[in-house]
Length: 50
Length: 277
Image (cartoon, rainbow over all chains, first blue to last red; front, side, top):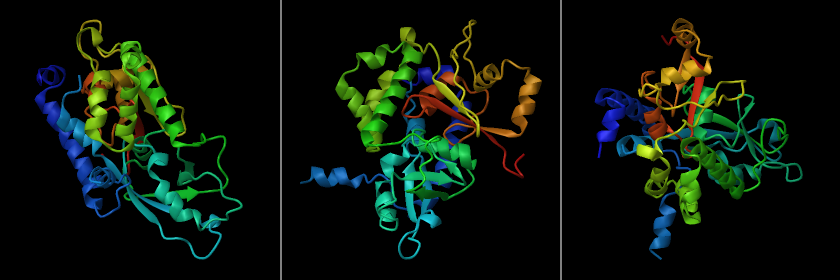
């Protein structure tokens, strides 16, 4: 139910905020994907398959 | 209630590329060790994610002198109990990638930093802030009504970077409709070289309008005139989660979507960088 979202902020304002977040992640994360992740998410998968 | 998963996902996926180096004066044997690069979650805390950094550097320091590892950026000790994203926004102005941080094993700045003896200390700190936030939002009723396993799930969700695990519990704390409407917004405002600001602030005016980020900033500046406020903000940036939200954004929406996992909206006010209009 997205009605609550629409009541609090306009779709335009929401789009502005989401664009800023996406841009943040392009600048801070996507360009540095070659760097080691601090939290290794694969460990859970390995354990679960044992 | 925070229902916009697309926004919540973008927040959760925030990472900071960090280049850790060992303080030159603490190199005990051999050459300066190579820097250690890590992509660190914005929502996390440094001691949760730097075990590998510590293991990498500890073999190069004097075993008889080294103590607890602590981190520093340009002479500023970094408080481990602030989320990583808050430290980055506050001290770098978002303009320093990868973020170059110096690791120390000597000369712990006792007057500036808390010790972090264990992961349990981080968990304890985290849960105390979550409880404080719920006291402001719901008089502490929601967090007190949760089971111990829910508290644990919040923590392990953050620790293991599991979005669904974390949000399946956190959504209950973010309930803000009907009788559960937030009473006050849990927020803190940070500026360099000043204690953070935290005051009571309601999400809705007496007339029933949503208070905005501009209203919040006005309230902490003693309600000064719009002209003065604009003058103050002319040379400043208001950063939340690494972005500058429009000042007309309702604070309730920001609290629901841009809060850190501790349920606080951490707001950094920093100087504009040169050549920035």
